[in-house]
Amino acid sequence: MAGRRAKGRGKLRIGDHWSAISIIALSQDNPLKAVAEFVENSIDARAKNIEIVRGRRSGKSFLKITDDGEGIPRDDRGRPDFRYVATHICDSIKKQLKRHGAQGIQGEFGIGLLSFWTLGEALTLTSPGEDGTLYEMSMKRNGEGYEVRGSRRTLFAAEGTELVVYPLLKGIRQFSGEKLHWYLASELRDRIRETGVNIRIVDRTARKSYTVTPREFDGRLIHELDQPVTPMGAIRLELYLDEPSPQRSVALYRKGTRVAGLAELDGFQAPAWSSGYVDGIVDAGFLNLTPGTRTGVIRDEAYEEFRRSLVPVTETLDELIAELKRVEDERASERTLRSIRRAFKGAMLALPAEEYDWFDIRRAAGATAGNRPGTAAGAGGDAREGVEAVGVADQASAEPDGDTLEPDGPQTAFHQFAGPLHSVVISPASSVVRIGRSRNLRAVCRDRSGRTVEEGLAFAWSIAEGGGRFETPNTEIVRYFAPEEPALVRLTVAATQAGVVCEASALVTVTDSLISGSSGSMPRQGLPGYSYENAPGQLWRSRYETEQNVIVINNGHRDFVFSARNRASQLRYIARLFVKELVLRNFPGATSAELLDRMLELMLYLEKHLR
Image (tube, rainbow, N blue to C red; front, side, top):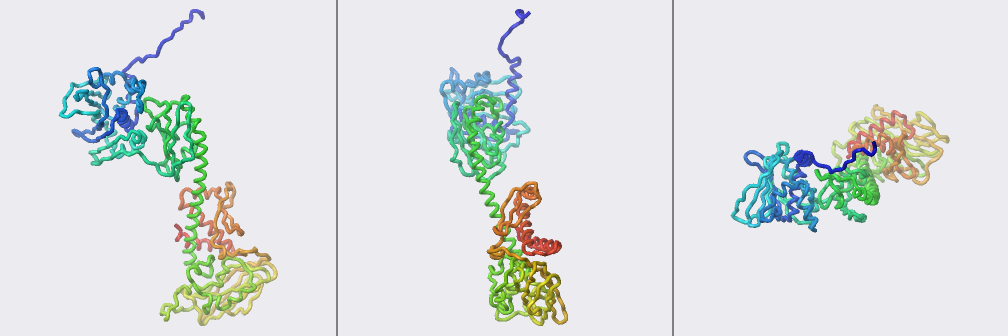
C-alpha cells in the first residue's frame, strides 16, 4: 500500500488572473499613498520638476501629475512601451533596471500604477516618443483591458509624463491640496532632500498652491547615538528629543520613503518609541515590505536583525528620556512654587496683618513702622528681649498695622479718620511660648471700614483657660508670662469705647522645649519649598519637615494621581496642601473647627490669586 501511494509535485498557479489583478489593485487602501507612489515614479524617472494639479472638469474632480523626467521606457521603435507596462504586472521594468546596476530607484513590484483604483474611475498616462510625438495609454477601474491611442503631434517637443485620474471617486473628492502637501513632505522627506526635486501642488478648487518642502523636526538632534550597522546593511538614525507631544513619533523609512510608525511594529512598544519624547526617522533599506500597501514589514530574518540592532539605541533613548523627565519635573516644581508664592503674597496682603503676616510680605512691600508712635515696635520693641517663642504669627506683634501702608501726607483727609470701635483682634492670634518665659501681645482695634482705632479705648485682658499672668493687663500691649508647666492657654481681651465693647481671644501653646537654631520662625525662613515622596497606599497626603522647611507631598496618594491630569488641577491640590500644613503650623492648639475656618479663609483668598 505504501509503495502505491501517489506522489506529486508542481508549481503554484493563479487560477483566475483577473481576480488576482483585482485583489492587487485594491490592496492599497490609502489614496494619499497612491499619489505618493505616482510621485515616486516621476522621481525614479529622474524628474527635476513635478506638478500636481487638483481641479474640476465638467463638474467632476480630477488629479493630474506632470513631470519633466525621462518618461516611459521606449521600445525598439522609440515609442513608450505601454504594452510592457500593462502586461507585466508584478514584473516591473525597474526591477530589470536594478539588475543592471541602476541606483536610487524605489519601486520594484510593478503594481503601483494599479493603485489608481483607490483614487478614481479612469487613468490616462501620456509620454513622448523619441521624435517628440505624444502617446497615450488609458485604463478603467474594474476594466480588464487597456488602450493605447494613436499618436498626436504637439507644437513643441514634450518631455516627461502626464498622469490624469478622472473622475475621482466620490469619497475622496474633498482631500485637499494642503493635506496632500503635508503628507508628501513627510512621506517622501528624504527622497526630496536627496534628489532635490521640486514638487508643486496647485489646488484650483481651493485657489491655493504649495511647494512641498521636506519635513523639519523640532527638538534637539540626538548625537549620543551610534549609527547601527548590520550584516544586511546600515541603519540610518535621525532622532530628535523634546518635550512630549501626541504628534511626536518616530517613523520607519525605507530608502527615504516612509513605511509606518515604528511604535506600530512588533518589538517597538518601549517608551523610547511611544512616549512622544522622541521624533524623527529610522531608515533601513534592507527591510522587505508588503508589496500591496508598502506600509507593512515582513517579519523575516531582515526584520529580526533590524530589531536586535536597535536594542542598544532603545536603552540609550530611555536614559535620555529619564533625564529629560527629571529636568521637566524640576522646572514644573519651580513654576508651581512661583505660582504658590505669588498667590500667598496676594492673599497675605488681603488678609488681616496681625493674623496672617507670616512671611514679612508687608515689610518687603516697603512698610516702615520700626519707630512710628503707636506701633508695637515703637511702644515697646525692647520688650522682646528675653522672650523666646516660635510660630510664624509671632512677627506680627512687631509689624505695622494695615493702616501703616497708607502714605503719610501733610494733611489727613476726612475719610482717613477712624470711626467708632467695631472689632478687636489679638496679635498674634496664635503663638508658642516656652515654660517660664514671656512674650508681648497687642490688641488691635478697628472701625467698620478696617481703619485702626486709637482714641478713647479701654482694655481688660484675662486668662480664660490655662495659667500664667499678665503684666499691666489694662493696656493695649501687654506682656504675658507663661506658667511653669506645659499647657494650652486661651487669652481674651475686651476693648471698650463710649459704651461699645468688643472681645477677642488668642491661643498660646506653652511647651517645655523649642526647636533650636531658627526656632521654627517662618518669616526668617520664608515660604517652605516642597518635595515628593512616593508612598502609594498610605493615607498621609503631606507632612511638614521643620528643620528643612520643606513640605513633603505623597505623590503616590490617589488624590495626587487624580490631580495630575492637568497642571491647573495639580497646582490647586499642592496649594491646598500648603494651606493645610501652614495653618497647622501657625495655629497650634486651635480646635478642629477653628483650624477648618482658618483653612477655608486662607484658601478663599489664595485661590483668587492662584494661576
